[in-house]
Amino acid sequence: MMRYLLLLFFFGLPVALLAQDSTAYELQRNKINALLSQRSARFGQYQQSLGARTGIFGMQTKKDIKNSNEILRQIALNDNNIFRELKILMEYKEMQVQQVQNTAIASNERIQKYTQAIKKLQDNNAKLKVEAAELESKVTFTHYVIGCLALALLLTIIIMYAKIRKLRKA
Image (cartoon, rainbow, N blue to C red):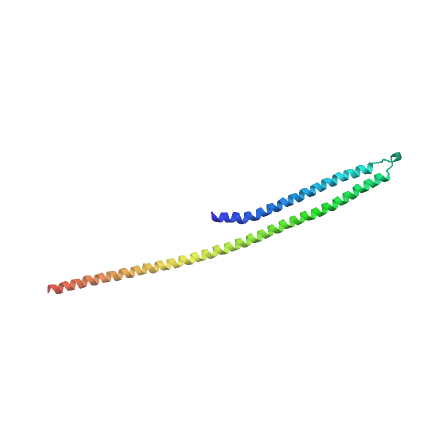
């Protein structure tokens, strides 16, 4: 159970950090979409200003042309803003990719360390099992030896007791 909680913590933490970056990414996208909407609206104004002919005989006046040029200049400035914001958006995206790569590398390193630790523990466990089996066989052998010695001592005591009884009778 603890292992699952640790895994959730280690993998959940980078996800939370990515969520913060995703929020900034979404805000940046919304900003760019707003700039694109402004550009579309200004381009519509530009199309209308090109069609405006307030001069005599339906001709364009200097004022009409200046108005069209000003709208076109605003579109160019807006395009520059869009490019600047797109660059920021791409930097966010690159940062997210780098974070994902760093998280993957860190996770792989942790997994390799866990695998090495598990292998080491398994090797130690196998070694301890072998040692336990050897100790058990030694204990069993020792029990047999003690049993044999106890039996020999008991037989010696019985034989000595029998001889002492014979000597007392005689």
